Amino acid sequence: MKKILFVVNTLGRAGAETALLELLRRLDSSEYEVSLYVILAQGEMIGELPSHVKLKNRRFNSQSVMTGKGKRAIAVTICSSFFRNGGYPGKIHSIVSNFADMERTGKIQTEKLLWRMLSDGAERLNEVFDLAVAYLEGASAYYVADHVKARHKVGFIHIDYRSAGYTRRMDRDCFRSFDRIFGVSDEVREHFLLVYPEYATKTKVFYNMIDQERIRRRAQERGGFADGYRGARILTVGRLTYQKAYDIAIEAMKLVKDAGFDARWYVLGEGDQRRQLMKKIASLSLQEEFVLLGAVTNPYPYYMQADLYVHATRYEGKSIAIQEAQTLGCAVIASDRNGNREQITDGQDGILCELTPRAIAKSIMELLQDKEKRKALRRAAAKKDMTQPQGLRMLLELV
Image 1 (cartoon, rainbow, N blue to C red):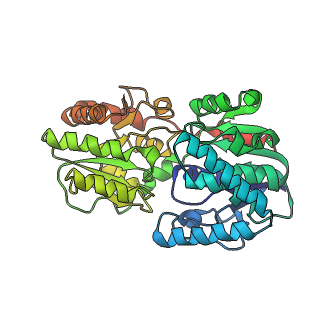
Image 2 (tube, one colour):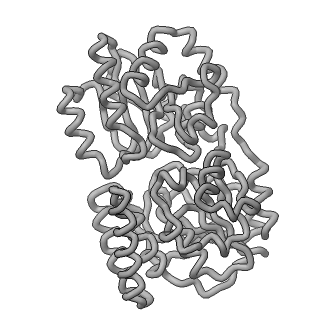
Image 3 (tube, rainbow, N blue to C red):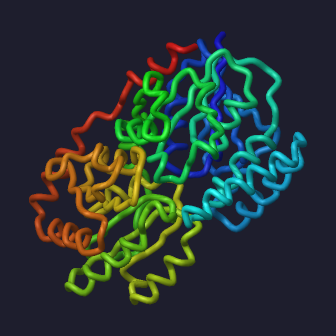
């Protein structure tokens, strides 16, 4: 039986982790011995791990990486990683050099600052795999490249690599050891190759897998909005991070409110920007109109009950949230940015707009006023087939 190892940074509730779990569900347990190692040994989606997948972490914390208790657990893991496996000078050097690179760009990203140290301080697996898959950038890629013994190695790229802050110096050419590199969209592949043009021949596209029938079934379960609001509902699903541009969305909602629309914007997700966003919401007196609901186990009833789904992000790989919204027949508005434009045909199965408060607000108001247009977008979105079986074949041909 062929042995496959997948490595991921966390199992927190996010798009890439959702796509990974769907990929794991599709692997035949009678043909493959499938294992998973989680660098930070933490995440609330561990309960959704398929039963045939062996978790290689000796200990695992099911706390969300976004809660206070979860963040304290991560701090303990970071300290343990520093002292595990020795190599203290190298670990300190990686942190200092990464900090210097980030300081030059003017943006300090704590998780990327520590990815190399976390990789070097992770547990070692004393076995040889037929295939090792780094399913995320950063620590997962470094760990598979440097510390996993495998006949073949594969890396996945889920974001606009350069916009996300990765550099060749940070990576230390880890991708040289991979037999194949998969970008989750054509644009993701193109932007990765701007950083690593020498890997063009081994970089392919592997579209995220989602189970559309499962999503539709779960959308019929109990749940969804519970505030009794009777106006128009706008929904966004995603972590509260800089990438997701909620600061711009809040300003757009202020314009919608000032124009007299009876609407409320809800966000499902947690993240490190909650406090800043709450301050911005309060400063614009939008406490009733822009609501941060936090993360939920089943977001699908919310999609079904929303009048509009808005995904106004600064950059993207290929958004699972957009795929879920289209599967459930939502009228989608998205920023005309990397990743988003590859998922939406403007005016046919969604709307693309500039990433400005005025452009987002204008698109929202136009669709709220045009019920027939919303219906047409919903019908076209719901017809899209996103099963993507060819990706699995490309992966397994390496085993």
